[in-house]
Length: 294
Image (cartoon, rainbow, N blue to C red):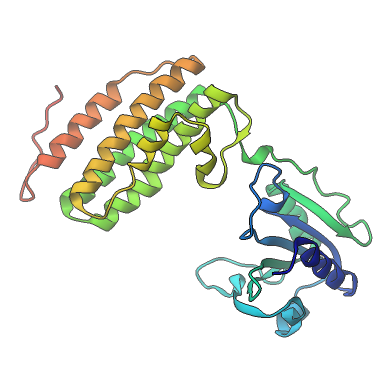
């Protein structure tokens, strides 16, 4: 496996020898001082170029970087929008274990991308074309203290999404229910966990990719409770996970609101949980809803 120094030398030597490449910058975990470095970290590299067409037409151009195990042309994937005239890439898994995510980008595209993602490092600039790039900043990825309005919106969204899971389960649509557990329930639950960790350790911190750093920042019962919200794809286990998520979200909401001085009530929790239990017991052949608030 080539060393980090060997990889950087290869990347920069290729740029210096090619007149079409005017600058090089890197983003991703390798420029994040808080990221844990390991052998699976890829190299997220952008070559700032005069044009992309000649790179796209020469399929052998990337051969100089080493033997490939497999690769992907992301801009040629019809599932995702692209602008190949301004940005084109190769995602390369090398046979030696290294991975290079390489893009050629026009200057205008690069400056816009650097504005949107401030965690980058300029590695090489032949003629100062990146002088107008914004200052690098890690703040984009840090957990901030929420405004009360956003806090309440997350609370509302969590409880609203529970109904999608419940009706999916009642209909026997397990994939629908699992999907909404992921995109709605756990997304909002994870956000509340991040804020709660902020009340314990101070805000302006990194929760890691997908929140993995929270394992070391939260009490064990909270972290383990979160893991329990991942369900097997059975009706019984998804119901279990949904109720566990509601229980955990309620506890986190109370703790976080108290620490931040926000006002919350248990009305949503009480009403929604009651309706979820009613839905769980509702016969599949029911023709109407006869639910009453306690």
